[in-house]
Image 1 (cartoon, rainbow over the protein chains, first blue to last red):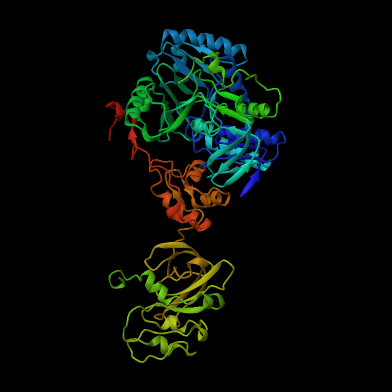
Image 2: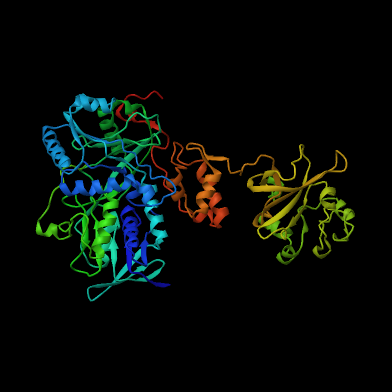
Length: 382
Length: 254
């Protein structure tokens, strides 16, 4: 079975579905999303699904603010019949080192200048927001009420269904096995369900984006690494905001359903595609969580799992075309923030593909910035 | 095998299954008499000569489908409750199965019940379309149920409880009903993983130990997929809920 598409998007996570929706909304016909398993089966369905506007670089602040504004009305904009469960309980980001205190104060200044109403708090003020916080473990905190959490499955479904209503074809359980390039131009995509002739391929394959890059001999300067997370039994509401610490290495959020999601990064994690669960994570995570938020020790862990961060050297995404192959676009390297940036990714990628001016300037987030050594390092990452 | 379990094997059933051409054309009696025993009331009950005369009282009955009018006399006369009437011409999608029924109370026409297979396992939801009460209190009654056509040779008993009603909770941890699962399947969520992520069924403390199999059955019923071919979500550690504090050596009380 051969078919023809104007754009083939590889990856049925938040990025792929949001890009497809935005292209279709701009009138592009014959957009196809190819997903090797079911929608959200990769990092989107495995992530903590928080969204914060409290970033350390101007652009990340703008991308996140754009996404928050979208999420606030996403059920209506996308015409979703269920609920994406956007809960804006804020993010309380705790500082545990003098260096963090200094950085956070700078961050708040930057965020305020961009219209993000974050504020710097003393440990005591932080405890007023999260009463079960052990305030002796922190030196200060920042808080922004715009931040929050969504249900990643419903959010992706909302984009996917809106895209389908606009004519996008979403092929699940379909794996890309090869990409045809002729004279440096994209010609088509070979899948397990047939060939799709297309001049444009968007690589939104998350943790597996380098494998897609290899199919067209484009080396993508990202690496994937496992990040683990756990979920507890549901309990009565006791924590409004996400509590996050960079040096303490924790993020934890009570979702509307009542469960706590608790995750951390591991600097010793190898760079590969494993997504198994480890006992070591559980021990370290329990220690961090119980130190900072002792009341969590009483909650029963229901299960743990893992997903892939697709990391870049500056913890910012790669957006846009590549020089080597005409028609090959990247929306990769989100470094653990791809879900929350989804709405911005969809909007900006559609604009780039159609040659329109972009809502937020991302021209320097191209793949070759790493080779040029022009990096803007994001300091605030778990 | 049947001597040990009381349940006929696949081969046993194949042997007594009326040919497809007959089933497509008419309602017929299915005689599930698997052993040679000295018994012939089915032959004497049939006024239409559809059951061949026995040469030996121990013979197993032989039916001439073309002569069977599905009157059901043999069903109520068989002391072994071994004869059923199936009618695959009942509707486009459904067949009826008439079974001998010797329990009280009898179901009522219009009731929904749970259809069971020969081993007593729930098969599907069934609507009672006819109840024929025995002439005397101690005579056999029959109950006719409408079931999906593919179950006409599977359903052989019933339970008055309507297990497969829409309001039956199948994910006890998250309180998800069968009706909600059916709705999702009808919207195109036809894998356990998708249903889990949209509805939370299977995300609770038991991790789907109860609901997973039931959801798979519903997917099979709705789509015809083989349960063996279905993609299975991963069971995650810890296998039972454990207090977070236990991992740091305290706070646990169980």
